[in-house]
Amino acid sequence: MEQVEKATVTAGLRGANWDPALMRRPYKVVPWSLQTADGQKTLGFLFTASGNEKTVVSIMHPREMSVTHYLVPAVLDAGCACWVQGPRSIGNDLRLEHELALLDVAAGMQHLRELGYRDIVLLGNSGGGALYAFYNQQSRMAPAERLTQTPAGRPTGLAEAAMPCADGFILVSPHPGQGAILLNSLDPSVVDENDPMAVDASLDPFSPDNGYDPVTRTARYTPGFAERYRVAQRLRAQRLDEKARSLIQQKLEARRRLKGDAPSFADRRVAAHAPIFQIWRTDADLRAWDISIDPSDRKAGSLWGNDPFVSNWGSVAFGRIVTPESWLSTWSGLSTRASFEKCAESIVAPTLLLEYTGDQCAFPRDLEAIFNGLGARDKTRVRVRGNHHGMALQRDEPSGREVAGRHIVDWLNARFPAN
Image (cartoon, rainbow, N blue to C red; front, top):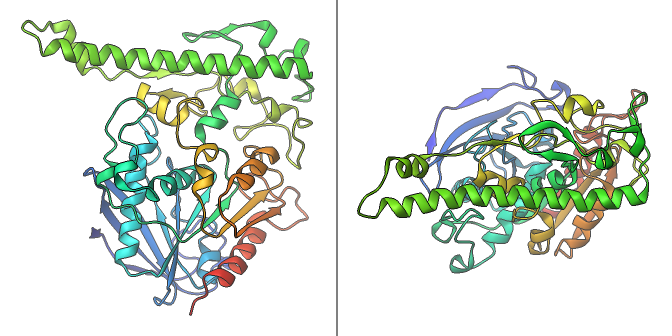
């Protein structure tokens, strides 16, 4: 483990993304470069105020690095240190396999234990929630019982990794998992995966004939349409799974032939090829446009905006470009293991779930299922007005981030006191 540099930063200086007024004391941030059990690198930043903190709160997302996460000030206010970690491939989830991302989490956890912290609390925000739930499930197993392969058949190395267990969990606007949200967001009216413009009109969620109003950018879908739509979404996910497994099988068969007496150049090419494919039209969750489905304080639209013709057919959206391996491990709602449905029961440590009532990504029934599925006896669910990122829903009300921060301070002080 390599300490890159040491820096003392005064609140509000050096371009911090949080509101400087929330950083009520000077703090120190130390960047660390860590090596994972499989020889990769992951980067983390340790924030401290007193330097004598006994508890550290860890924040991580499988695809992003948010050094100045908006909840860092609240964690420091609670008398805890805060560890913000990035995955091995920050901002590039093309090859993200969650089983291997657990090795990144493990490197951070081991580092924090070696630094001597008494308690480690995992703060899973958005996609970080399912990542930490998956890590928790595997960390609580005996090494020999952990997953040995990814859904694509790649060895995980989890049995050989040190995976310290967490002492508490804070879940902030957690969605069910990246595969789960994509399964609900797949546009099932896709006729041909190689033709983004081909549409089955009977399943088109953005057709006025099916309940969408292009003027107001809202919808009212009938129960019958919604049911047919959900069935078709699963069928499309199954087809994508089959495509991914077929590409992997072609490579494996070519590699087997290379071991024969007369390997061909064609086999060499296929064996070395790392296929990448596009998945178009992945912003079509009916709940985003018809807010009468699982009502909440949210506005119509998705995380990507309120014009589905831009987000659904555009170049930026969930799971737009994938490998067969990353599709099966991360984005397939049918094959991924990184979901609260599969992992929530393993969370038995004290847990705080903070729900933003205007969330456009984690919906009320999703959060109800996550909370009910938690194995912890000491679990608390708090609703806070705000959107998925904790921003205020109206100009005349406080930011959901500030309110959530106060709940986190109170919860940490009650369960992980500074002394």
